Length: 461
Image (cartoon, rainbow, N blue to C red; front, side, top):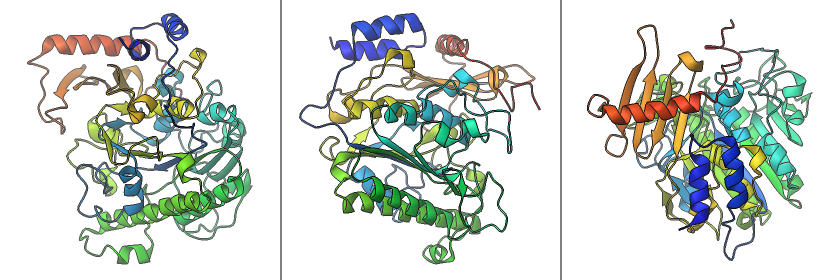
């Protein structure tokens, strides 16, 4: 029996108490590491915003509008691995970021809905350590470019949350073109100093990421590039629109224009790694913050639903990883994975160990990426929005239960995702025992959560 795999599986079970997790971690430390490969030196995350599941060429069902128009992003998958069943822990921007940044379900600390605009009463719980805190403690310089959206008061800003260098905006979105008088939350700043309004935002973020790599090429670094593209407003560059004049619907064409600019900026980051001979030593991840916002032009392909919902279209995201010599080119991973796995995977890639007192909810994907494991141990993945009175979902294996709550009482919907990717055939009436089992496991997980600290479900206006 593979005891490391057993320990991973036990640690991921929602019924396993925190005390038991600590005992398991002590008895069976998860030490599956690279075989003849040195640890990663750098980690780079390239993070898009509101893109659809079908909006990149490397996806299994790519949109015909973009299938040939994202070559640089597609190269990450071609040179490494693509994930067919990757998820975010949230269905909208701020909660999904809070989960990824901490490696913990954000519902554990009340970060369940988007932070309201100009909200000055708090942000992401100050008691939570971020991925920048964790990797910074492992002697990596940490740089964040782009969107923050995790708190506006100074104690909640990036430079106080583990990031040595920040170039971006605090708010969740802004104009892609210069603003005459940007607010303090929408202005692009660098370490607290407002920068002049000039240039196209996606290009500016690409420039900043390249400059960061140039300035820190001599030391190990963690760079998180959090693009606002292709989140609205639909302000594509005219020259990008000219390259996609075959897209008839104006809204979709503008959205595609934002994706084209995103791909160009990603390419510049990859080129900078090559220019400084860092590509072979750098673990690169591309993914998106939540399901596509189809109401403004995203394409989720066969998936049901959109951003903000717990159907697959709201939580399943594109994901690709590249690490030459460690991840075989052209790898396809069908195991369900979640953004909470990224922090422990980064720590593992650096040949370091996650401490039990971090109480992370994800697992190190390194053994799967490197071929030491054929498949991840069984585990449950969970979602909830808007507190205990809002929608919730659980996935175990191929079975997914969605619970909708409202004035008429909860309704339960069961799907077999192996045969029904589009969640068109509700099996709840046919398999009541499975519904009961999954609902019980979901309730166990929800018992560990707190109510939202703001927004719907918080009881606050």
